Image (tube, rainbow, N blue to C red; front, side, top):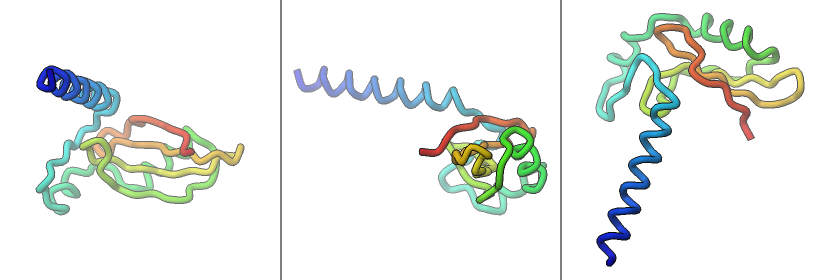
Length: 106
């Protein structure tokens, strides 16, 4: 009985993890042991362009901009306080300059 419950739980976790990964897909997939140099060599757009793209989408003041790993992909994360005083995070692909997702920070 315990094996069946554990197997069902494991399957549920795997399915929910893969559903999350499908929602967010960037150009540069990051491995656990990948060096910083190999990550940076794949970036095609400068951070200043990512900031411009983000502020074109969300009007407000940029409070933070960084290149980071999110859901296994290298992305620019731009944090903006909107004109309505909401904290918005804009995730931008560092290769295609595409906005991958925008979310309100709680």
